[in-house]
Length: 168
Image 1: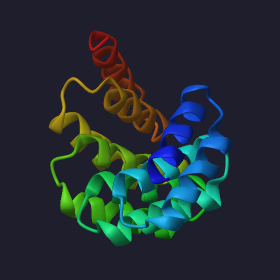
Image 2: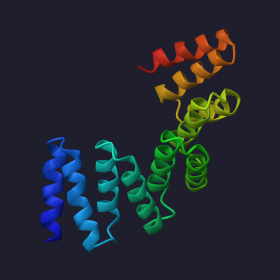
Image 3: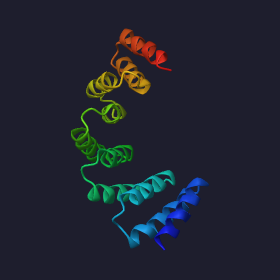
Image 4: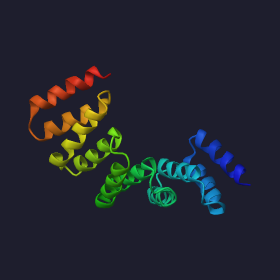
């Protein structure tokens, strides 16, 4: 029965029918709530379907199952921050950062939360650290450039834009 729900969910996901896929994953986790992979797929399907509160609930369930996995904690933080739950989103992202301090993506995500709040002074160090940790991550350079621009340092902004172009 569980395999059938998952196979049907995958079918719908592959056909970009995310609401239907999410419904199948929900049926699966109603019968077996211990499978972190299925919870993750459920959260992603809910998010893709635009069901953000259900996606948040699925990510929360996932984090309860695996609280020490930054790959589960960080997406919850990002989604919370994107849905105007800034403080809670930042909390989860900072928890993910503690679990994976060398993750350029998590640093970039924290910087993005601050930047989206127009708090460029707090965003900039995270973007700079993202670039330091992964010198090939173009997004880190672009975000750093945007921060410098917002802070009025056009010369530094141009420098990081140039570096970003070289990463293409």
